Image (cartoon, rainbow, N blue to C red; front, side, top):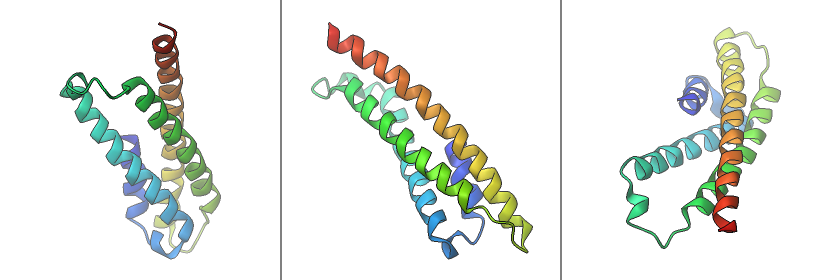
Length: 124
């Protein structure tokens, strides 16, 4: 939900005039789609039908890459927010920056728990 807020807040503005917001949009939409994809896989328990895939490693790689790229995107988003004549863009960009950092912290926590799961799986 937070990732959805990030890209909808940016998509409602003239983000295409600023290349930095294009990067933030790419990261936000890409990881939102992948997160929904993995959510469907876990909710339907499809991962039990494909035991050849090391799901703990996949989860760790996904969450780790999402954390790193979202951190970069959140920093780019926050540093690109400028007060312009149109306050709608400023407010939307500031809110998207806030939510981008929230999403980053969620992925950081998820990365930590994925690492704990991966480490316990590899020690067995």
